[in-house]
Amino acid sequence: MPRRPYIGFGFHLVLICIVALTTLSSARAAAPTPLPSFKAAAVAYDPAWGDLDGNIARMVTGVESVAKQGVKLAVLPETANMGYIFDDFAMVRPYLDAVPGKTTAALAKVTRKYHMYVVVGLGEFDPTSGLGYNTSALIGPHGYIGKYRKHGLNSQDQRWTSFGDIGFPVFDTELGRISLLICYDDTYWQYARLALLHKVDIIAWSSVSDRVMPGTPPDQTKGDHSTIASVQHLSADTGAWVVAATRNGIETNPITKQQLYYNGGSSIWDPFGNKIAQLPVPPPEVLPSGVHGVAIATIVPAKSAPVRAALLARRRPEMYGVLALHRAPTDPTNGTGQAQSVNLTIEAGDISKPAAAAEWTAPKQGGLAVLPALFRYGPNLAAADYRRLAEPQDGPSEKALSDLAKRGAGYVVGSYPERAGTAVYHTVALAAPSGQIVARYRATHLTPGSWAAAGDRFVVASTPIGRVALALSEELSVPEVYGVYSALRADVLAAPAGSWQGFTLLQIDPKLYNVPYPPGTPYAPYSAAKMGQFWVAAPGWGAPSKLSAFLMGPEPVVATPPRAVVGGEILNVDVTAPWAGTWINQQQLIGGQRPWNTLPLVLAKNSPCLAAWSRASGWNPVCW
Image 1: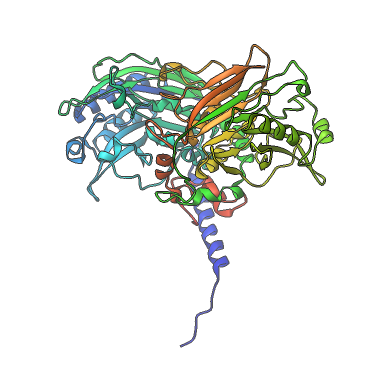
Image 2: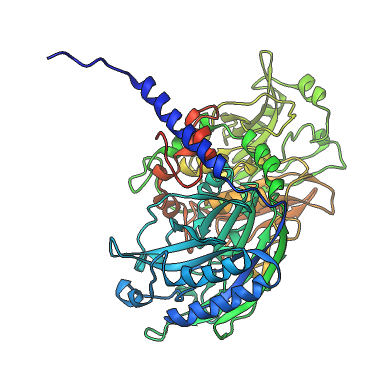
């Protein structure tokens, strides 16, 4: 029997790409003409527990009232058709709706009448499988468009919800490219970055951001959190507009009597990570079912593209391979897991004094001291000067770090311009109590126009005080940087900073925290600590009146509020590493990841596969 000729992998890849590009061309031809601007609304709708028909009727009334205000996109909270507190599938089953189903059909009457779009969170029953999903549906002027099933399942979801199985679809509309996410999805930085790679203009986020009831005994508050206290990263890390709807008031399960307080704060964010509208954060109170506030803002979809391009330019996917590895439950990088007290010393540089004259503080014995970036030179020299002053390894800067480490019998981190042949790097070095330099990291994700060349590897040093990762604070605006360090199981990320000028500030309402953060707290290191679930030590330079050094903790809502000092001052804090967690910790975070559905994060920038997928609608893994 004659053998068939071997066609080869290359031919198959080309064929796949041709099919994908043909599909892409058809999608482009059918894509609607975008509106230059429109009004969007984050609607604080509060459902009645277990009242499917009543909730549908009240949603229709609420959406119609919003439509009469000229709104073209209205986003409603999670599980708006039934409420949220259910013990198991048997309890929730009578209140689930098919998608598409009764709820989407009722809302479609409004969207057709007013030529608008609605995103609504629903408890879904799938008649084919008999399973339940926590789902978000998009309805437009011509009816039901599509849905997304929640991936980030918390402990309440897992009582009855199956894991989302349809990826992260994108919907092309006249409003722009829309992606849907639900509540606890914001715990995973990867989902926002998928939206970036998928060229999303608008993220519609439906949530029930809850807190435990006031007066709950401390030993029962481990689950306390405020999901909407993470929502800023959905815009800052994607260049997308974000319409974030959550609910208010107290919900009571009439069967079990369990109660949750929903803290409100529905908001809208621009592509730069700035909040442009927000509803109040109300006190705990019992509210009738219905709409309890609408945040409205004007969205200009075209503003997303240039921000998105700048974010994409800083990515280096060739370094992100570890993100495609499954790291749980037998994670080989997970160290001992033995929590211990670690002393961190973080010193803010006084920018008004010459850096070389500064008397830097030694670490506590067995502790870790982190100095501002370029501690011997300051942050304000010209690029040519840093290149001229660049030192070899074991030069003056590393000697200064070694001397400081020996003096305090602890660890010290600092950065300096390093010369290696003709190349100059911005290098972060770690000195051990012996004075030995035990780790060096050449900054890999530099800001545009940097005086330094980019390094090509991440560095985590395993020490008796924990796993210490090295970076610059300016790199933490690239989530993959702290994402890789989380996957490598860092306990502390030492991230020297410059002057903080130009950094986006944290803009989450302080009322969403047990302890408010200091005004002027930068967003990027805060997000890195929370999303990576480790401590971030970020000392920088500033005036004696300006906050310049920050310690960010893994759980800022309840237990580890950001700490800060002004230029010339020292922050000295004992922390627990690795962080044991309250409502989440690093082990749980990594255990909840599903690398198979985030593979675009590791595809090369010039990959034909990525190019085809990033422009396509829906969720179509065209070649992986």
